[in-house]
Length: 187
Ligand SMILES: [Zn+2]
Image 1: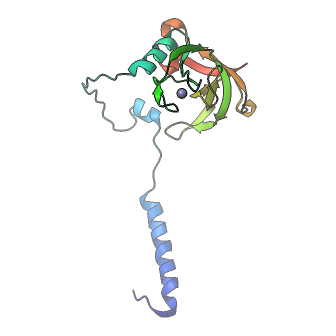
Image 2 (image 1 turned 60 degrees about the vertical axis):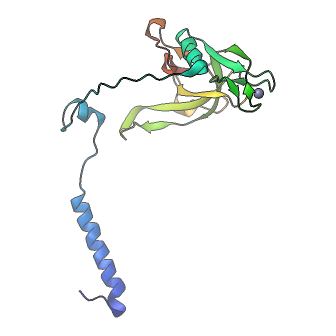
Image 3 (image 1 turned 180 degrees about the horizontal axis):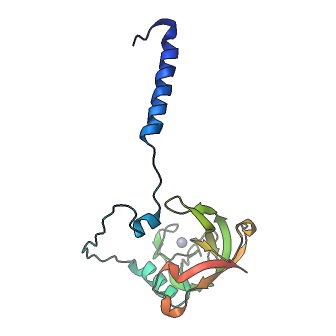
């Protein structure tokens, strides 16, 4: 093929149209769903590696998780700047010194920001949208909050500044994880 003179752009246009067409034909496919793996609709391999390792949560997060199991939220206070921090840490990054005391906080808070998710991780449409939110915990300093889900609320009802309360798992189902709180609901 000769590409010269006035017909050059036209030829390039023809080539790009042609490759667009062939790409459509070559890359035709379907998206995979999580259920396709579970139901063995596609070829997949399951492997359980025997990997042994320990993850040290550290003093602050270790106590935070242990308290979650008891249905309580705990933070740390810095006596110099008077900030109350959650999730807790043993060092104040503002004063640059170890902080001073543990402090229990209410399992309530205010929605600082939120998002409404209509698709799952594998891009499947969710029947019930998920609403992740940053919740500023009551009693902690401004802008101190945790990321969690909102529940028992219609997406269109969610507002920044909305007051919410934790809904906990039953005590025998808690395992010392942030998921010991099922979600936060409006109050
Ligand atoms: Zn401080």
